[in-house]
Image (cartoon, rainbow, N blue to C red; front, side, top):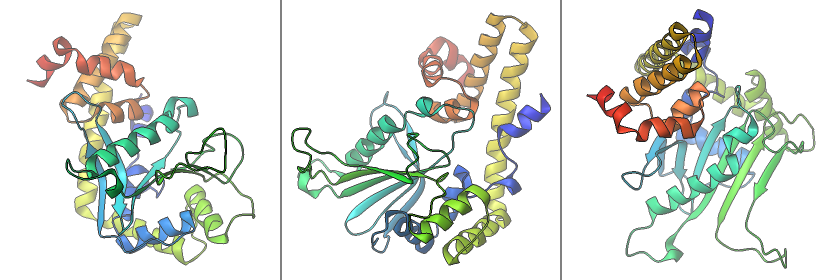
Length: 289
């Protein structure tokens, strides 16, 4: 039980670039973020004039809440970069194709004011950096754009692209800088100037007392919530007791400000179950007051 709780959220000093928190903090360096994007996309990225990590979206009162790892823009495009780990989940569970669709729609709604024309929408690049092969075809990367089924040469110029990078790929038929970045994400070993800069940034984040405190606070909240829920379920020792324990875990995390998507991701609980508990006022509201 203790080992399970300890492994639930990594100790701060063990965080690597492939962990959400560390990825976001290192990418707050605009120059580094720009160079990582250019490396992955193999195309120029302009000077970044906005950069937000853990950006939150919820466009209606009852709408789904999402949090983007790194959202930034240059003079022509918006970039959303997500570090995606599989953990103990299946690829299907992550629903990356529909997640990419939802992330794009949230960004579009955020940037288009009521009086703006659709032509004012900037290009959008949704980027998933995956520590696994997201589609199982062994490709180094997967890029999706909208095309006409009847004539594949006809591209729908919506200027929205979705990129999925397979960091498990070890072939030499991709640019060397991408090979080095993939290797760094897999092993933590820097092999060129860019990955050395990333590694230096990781070291700096580990020394940041304020960020350490914020992470540890979140870790304590989540560990306590998980312990409370699991212990309750174990005490009951029956199916209904385990279910009640899961509910208590969800309610405790909601009470401490953790959103449904992150509860599902961190606790391996189906999102629909988390949302059912969140929507049940008889379960949640008494716990929140």
